[in-house]
Length: 294
Image (cartoon, rainbow, N blue to C red; front, side):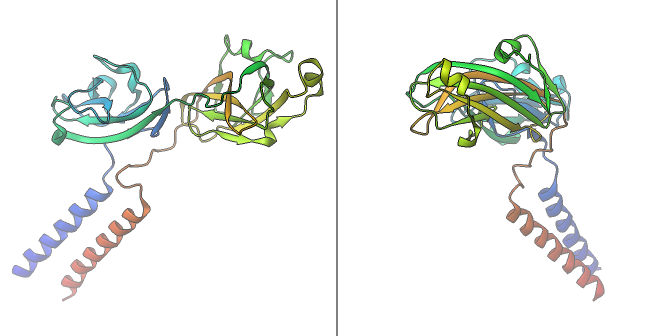
């Protein structure tokens, strides 16, 4: 009887440990870095008066806005910023914490946080002192099909039209003239790290002849196949003589209709943590089997 009780206790501990390690997260965010004004897509699992809030990480006294889980639907992805109540601040660049809080407890009672995730809101503004003198956005091509007018003026077209669908690649073409030589072009998606290359420069003798010999064209293929489902924004920069970004004012909003990839569980995303947990669970299970054999 004592052996049976010991086996039952070991088995219970094994199940509890493995369940805790591999339990599905009750709070998920589509990513952890956002541009200012970009939608923050959240999925929360809760009931009753469980709520989701957001606040600057260094602030502990109250949330900057909140929403009941039942209002947006438990397990349903929603745009946090569009659903918040009692918003009392602007969501500017910095570190922010999103928390799932249980049973209508106040934000300051962190012991009642069911789960939390830290995100960063960034401002990808230009760091260059170079001046943008002239520019033109000539064309937008989506998966091989030109969607803007063949006559150019894609920046005018995009103000009255939208780019949406299950998109793999977006190509943008145009030119820019700045106060220094252009050494490349770059783009960002949703304010994340810029992708820059001299290969994005396209020789434009027509532009050089009509505008200036230092003006350069650009032709950029942008892979958006991994962009999550929802609204996104591409921004185009020129790269000046010092390798710094110059804002060309070209912004391309698009809506990706592919399903978003499942976000990582922040608590178990580290492969080493998962590996250790697997070994621990297997070892404990081995103990149980060994006891049974004896």
